[in-house]
Length: 400
Image 1 (cartoon, rainbow, N blue to C red):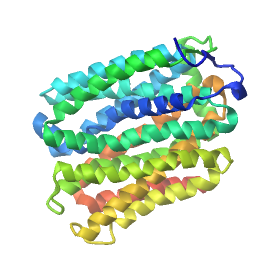
Image 2: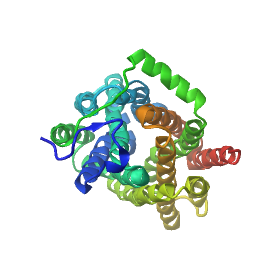
Image 3: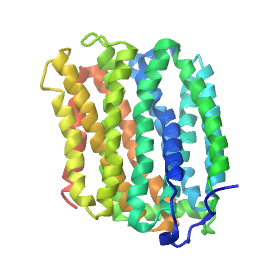
Image 4: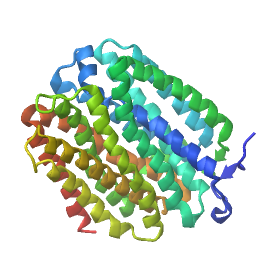
């Protein structure tokens, strides 16, 4: 039935071997699932126009998905420490698939925003798969395996925007969600066949599981710091990618959806940071690499002020800023995961859920703040807020 032996949470780490095909499958699955959260980012304009949302509320299209993701991280992902992981992943994917289909059929704002919320909830299956990959890996290679899987996840995040823009350019935004529904059905069939079951050893009840998360959040300094660091960086990331499509399609640059898609492809280069950061983390250089990751995100926003908005140089600098920002955010994400996954296998899913939930709250705030700031003060106000976020993380990091 499966090519890898069934896993238990207390299996001897050094005896686990992760086949290359399994790493690739997990990376591809993570990328395809997480893309569902980001398809709407470059389509905020056309979706809000079609649904009748005012410009000030357009950011809700992205924010609702991120809120749903946070809900799933806090209430569903911890079940990875309690319920057989393969079955849990497939059930959560089913919720996401139904929500994607509902979004494709929506013509009114409230039903679409509700569907967006459940797209976020259904996409948390990816954060059950990441700790699953960490369980597969031996201790000495955990950062490398997680980094490789995260590179697939990050490619999904970064490719989602250009793919959605290209599809919308040749058809409509509804088709983006229909095609993603089909992809989720096929992926669920493949994962159901290929993944070995993993039954956690915890015998906690659900209420006890959630209560233990509160204790972990209050008593784990490494988790607290890494989550808050990345909340600031991910808020900057979400702010950038929510507002740059509005900037690029506005009067200053006048790009089409195809142009926005080509711009978004620049961010794909940032995915190479994940496996690099994983290897750095395995060598024990997590702290050493954290500050450069934060500085890269701050520098990305500063670069956009070198030339007047609308010029060819400004567009080139914006592309370079996208690459640098995604590189810094990707690296810091993997560094944080490697740090928290080392704290204990028995509560790895809970730690991952708390870590992701915290910084996705930052992402939701960044998206909403970006839409508001751009409507009020254009790119000038938006970019200075984006610059302040990684600087805040850096100042907090300096107290470590």
